[in-house]
Length: 258
Image (cartoon, rainbow, N blue to C red; front, side, top):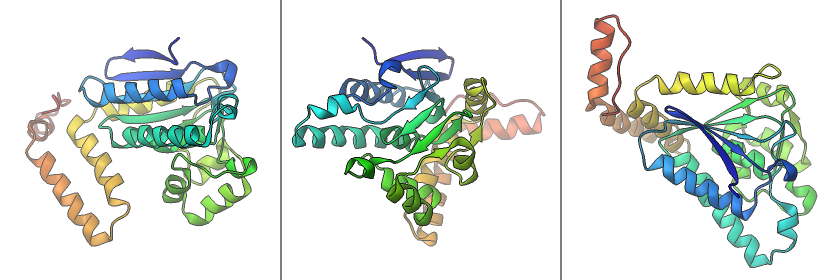
């Protein structure tokens, strides 16, 4: 059975983790299918934004499938984590913009999946947390690194070392979540955000995404040099000229991704 339901709406797709009975946990089959889907949208130009959410209203993704994990050897766990890291890195490196629509609990690997996305929208009932130390392990899908880069080491340590869970409002207040959605309007808000992305020039959007991500670990001078190199990439595009023409003619631009 497919692990995801896909709703294609032009340049935007909604991917719903279809595992409500197991709280949309990350199984090996789910991870494999996610990797294949990320590859599909990353090697084509048709899809420019992806909204990832979970089935039901209880969980976005409750982390690793612990029933499956109980039957794994240490080598199996290592292989699973390697696959998780590769897949989440592919989400980050894709030209597509990924938006996590947090409909419920996003714990452990669920928070790590949300962190790998570019933007996060939360329903009022959403809950986030890297709770691994309660199980005698640590985040293994990039959580210690991505959370720290997003909210700073002090706040990251507070959350990871205590295994504390955050509600949607607190997550928004510290910048872990970008937008809060009113009750019953999560996908509407996430889709509006996706539309605000895809209306812009495709090459410019993806290049800006990569400039931000690649510059995070650089000294300011090197990061500014990186930005200049990225600017050179968009300077040569037809879309840049179309943007200038549309501005002069007082009309909406028609971007072709060239």
